[in-house]
Image (tube, rainbow, N blue to C red; front, side, top):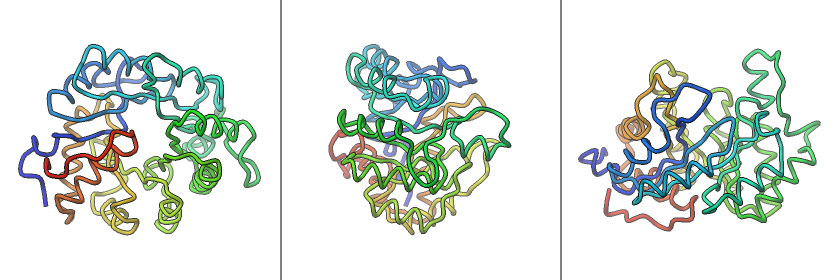
Length: 290
């Protein structure tokens, strides 16, 4: 069932995956603009992501100049920040306000992403011979100590499972499998279930359903969510690219497409409010505001 109006959808919604300027890639809006739009629409919180530098400082400033919405950031461990760099993670987490909460394993520079896109450039490995590299374990230990959120980035399905298993052993409380059914990851449903059983949340994003990104369909997303269980999943936009709609608007469109696949209002609230808010430690959202 689709919420009765867009306003119903936005009230209390949380988007954990937004790209914005300033960036070295073309973006549709800057972090202030996204935060302002999300706040005006009634959203509860957003997370700003950059593949090449941390966004904890941007989150701090966006909060300061856009009161009324929770804004968070993080760091993606690509080559620009030194790859698997515990010092970069530690400094990100210490930025004033402590709004840098996310640590994404390598994305564009992951070994899996580079190989999938044809190779020929440096990459950031996370594992060798079925074992995580020592520096990766060091970062995971830091995430556990600082109570940060681990996201698997563009790791291969096997690497993602290894990361989640080790994270659980190290008592990392909050783990996200980054858009695992999307390009370039394509994780099988059996493995999605295994990761969910370990306590990780499964992210489903709408990037593939917008503009030139048609790698998957709303039906495929819906089938995967049903297979894993709504309680283990959440929706996010992964938008901000110059060629795509503004992140909040694309997010609402994505949710509407999923709702048409048979998810009721309670399930949509879990996917767009309850679970994302839980990940951020914001507490349970009011289901009655759907």
